Image 1: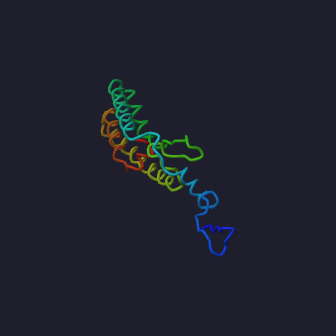
Image 2 (image 1 turned 60 degrees about the horizontal axis):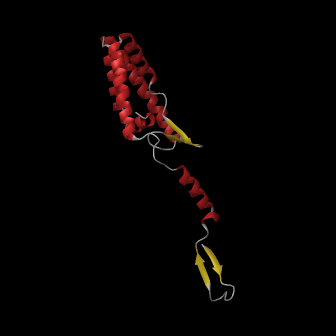
Image 3 (image 1 turned 180 degrees about the vertical axis):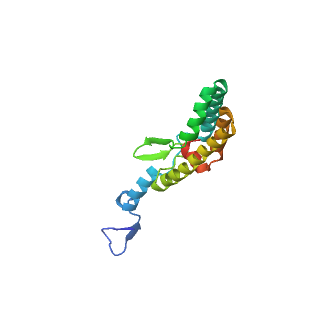
Length: 161
């Protein structure tokens, strides 16, 4: 609270008002917090789903047309596709996940790293199991895409899947 007094009658007229917003540490902190709080994602859900569908269709068409390319794609997607989150760097120094606008924090980074390692191992195991059964590479690729769709939603959002 900020107390101001009328010069002519100090004893009879005391006005209690709020302190100016710029003078308190709390308001400065709140300003910084407001600037870094969640905002509209750089890559919205509808666009993300449309892009994912289009990209997968193209990849599967390529795999169906060329068995050698299918082998390369299946291997690559099973071994290298879950390592990096899609980040939005446009609000520097704040770094956000592109799909959600959520700030990258030590806690979210730890979550991503933990889930990424576990999911990557499972994806590699899926690839090995399907190869040992003799499953065609284009079918393995579809199973990998289905596996990606089964991952926890927060993790998929970090990957922008």
